[in-house]
Amino acid sequence: MSWFNRFKGTATPTGPAQQDFAGNAAERLKKWESALQHHHLPDFVKQRLADAGSGKLPWIATMTPAELAQTHRHRVRPIAMVSGTCWYHFGYSWTNGHTAGWHAALSRMQEEAVAAGANAIVDVRMRKIDLPTDASMDFTVIGTAIRIEGMPPSPEPVVATVTALEFMRLLEAGIVPSGIAIGAHYEWLQGWDNYYNSLDAKGGWVNQPLTRLGNFWEQVRKKALLQLRQDVHRQGNGALAHIHFGQLLKSEDDKNPSYLGRHIVIATVIDSERYRSVPHDIRHVVDMCDGPSPLNDVRPGSHNVYDTNQEEGSI
Amino acid sequence: MSDGMAIPQHALERLKGLRSEGHPGGIFTSDFSVNEFLLVRKAGFEPVGLCVGSCIYHLGIQYANWSQNQEMDVLSQAMYHARELAMSRMRAEAEGMGADGIVGVELTVKRMEWDDKILEFIAIGTGVVHAKGHPGFKSHGGKPFTSDLSGQDFWTLLQSGYRPLEMVMGSCVYHVAHQGMFKALGNIGNNTELTNFSQALYDAREIAMERMQHEAIAVKAEGVVGVDLHEGSHNWKPHIIEFFAVGTAVTPITTERDASTIPDPQLVLSVNN
Image 1: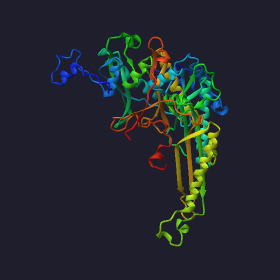
Image 2 (image 1 turned 90 degrees about the vertical axis):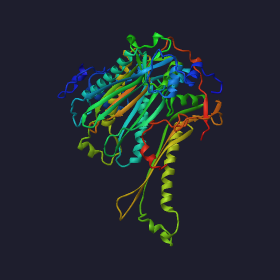
Image 3 (image 1 turned 120 degrees about the vertical axis):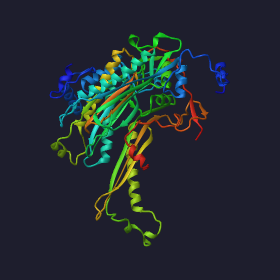
Image 4 (image 1 turned 90 degrees about the horizontal axis):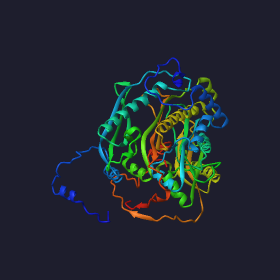
C-alpha cells in the first residue's frame, strides 16, 4: 500500500492496485536524475534487467509468435524490452539537435542492453511522444534485447531496426544489421533577396532553373549525406537509408529574406561480407489478397517520428 | 491448393441444399476473418462464441503539481481497474459458454462526449474450445486463457511449443512537469537535453513495464510475447500521459520443443505488382 500514500492532498484511490518493484517515488526520481547525469542506470533498472537476463524474471519481447519460433530455431533468446529516451531542447539548431538526441537515446538503450547481458537489440523503433512543448522533442528508441545461446554478452550490442524474423534471415545470409546512423545538416542562404533578381534578362517569361537556390539545397543534402557516411563508418560497412527528411524554409522578414535548408537522413547500418550470395531459395507466388496484403504491406506504426513529412511527399 | 484435396461429403450435401439434422453444437459467433478461422481450426480449436466485457468508469479527480514529475496514481489505478473489470466480465462470459480460452482480444477505450471524466472500456474476443476436449490449455485455476494474439499468431505460437496463459498489462499515468520560467530562460540559445522530461518518460515507462512483469510472474509465465507499449492521453491535461504495456504471457506446452523441429519459413516473392 505504501506507494499509494506518496502524494498527499489528492483523492485516495480505491479498487485493486498493481504491484511495483521499487517503492518510493521521490527516491526513484532522485535515482533517475543522478543516473541521467552520470550516464549509468539506476540500480533498480539494472537489477530488473540482470534478473531478466539470468532467467529469474519472465522475458519480455515485442516479437510475434512467428518471430519467437524462428529465434528459438537459431538458439536465440529474448531477454527484455529495452529503451532509451532523450528529451532535447533545440536552442541554436533544430537540425543538430536531432543528431544529438538520437545518439543519446541510442547509447542509453545500448546501456540497458548491456545490463541485460545481450548480444543484440532487434525490432528497434524510433518514436516520439506528442507533448506540446516549445522547441523541444522527445527522442525515444525501443527494442527487444536478445542473447544468442553460448555467446558471451557483448560489450556493445548491435542495434537492428528490423524485426526478429528479418534479423534471423539477414544473419543466415551473412549480413549483420549493426546500428542506426544519422546525418543532419542545415545552412542559411542570405543575400538571395528575391528570385526575380536571379533570373536572366528575359525575366520571368521563360523556363529556367534557379541555380543559386538549387546549388544551395544540393549542398545541404550532400553535407547531410557526408555526415551520414561518417556515422556509418563507425558502425559497419553499408547503409540502408530509409528516412529522408528535408525542408526549405523562408524567413518571415520580407525586406531581407533568408532561407533555411535542413536535411536529415537516417539509415540502418549493416556489416556484411561483399559479394556473398543469399542462400535462400525464393518462390514466386501470386498473392490473392485484394487491397493491402501482408506480403506487400509495410509494417504499420514502427517508426512514428518523421511521419508528417512523408504526407507532404518531400522525399 | 494444388494438392487436390477432396471436398468432404458433408460440405457437398450442404451445397446441394441439404441441411444436416440439427447441429448438436448449435451455432457459434466470432469476429474471425476467414483465414483466422481456418488457422484456429488447424490449431485444433473451435470457436464457440464472441465474448464481450465492458465497463463504464468514472475517473477520480487528481491534481498534479505543475512543476513536478509524478505518477497520477488515482488515474493509473482507474485505467487499470476499469480494464481489469472489462476483462474479467469478458472472461466470465467465456466461462459461461465453457470456453477453454479467448483469442484475439481487443481492448479499447472510448470517450464519452458529454463528460470528459467518463471513459468506456471494452474487451472483446472470441471464445474457443479444444476440439478434442484437451483440458491442458486452460489458465490457472481452470479459468479460460486470454490472449491478444490473432488466430494466425495463436496457431504459430502453439507451433513453436508455447501456449498462452493470460493477457498481462501495466498502466502508469504520469504527469510530466512543466519547465520553470527560470530554467527555460537559461536554455535559450542552447542545444541541450531537458533531463527533467527524459526522466519523467523513463520513470513512467519503467513503472508500466515493472507492473506488467509482475503480472507475468503472478501467472508463472516463462515470458511475455507480442508486447506493445502505448502512449496515450484520454481527455487529460496536455502534460498527462498514460504509458500502457500489454502482451500475452506464455508458458512452454510440456517440455520445450526442440529447436531443430521448428520449420523454416519459405521466402516468397509476390509477383502481382
